[in-house]
Length: 136
Image (cartoon, rainbow, N blue to C red; front, side, top):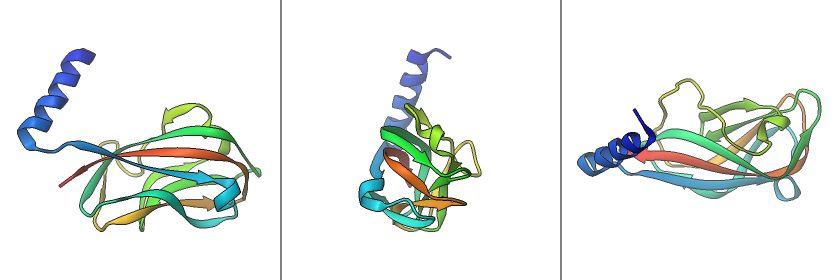
C-alpha cells in the first residue's frame, strides 16, 4: 500500500465510521515540573473517557538529561501509554511506541496526562508530547 492509498484509506474510514483521530498535547518542562522520581501531572490537554490511544509522539524542545538509569513513561490516569524511556530517547521528534499493544491503548475514564519518572531523577529538559487518539 502506498502512502497516498494509505491516506485515502484512513480518510475513508474516518468518513464511514465517524471516528476522527484527535491529538492531545502536553509538555514536561524540568524548570516547571521538576525531575524527581514519581508521578507528575503535565501541563496541557486531557484524554477523554473511552479514548483509544493510537500513538505517542515526543518532540524535544530543550535537551533532556538525567541520572544513570533515569526513565520516563507517559500515563493517562492509571493507564500506561508510553513505555519508560531514558533521557536520550527524547532527542529529535519521534514516535515513542505504545505500552502493551502495537495497535492501541484504551483509556476508560477521562484523565490528565502524567509523566512517571522512575529509578533516578531527570536533571533538565523540555518535551512536548502529542498523543493521538480516537474517541468511541
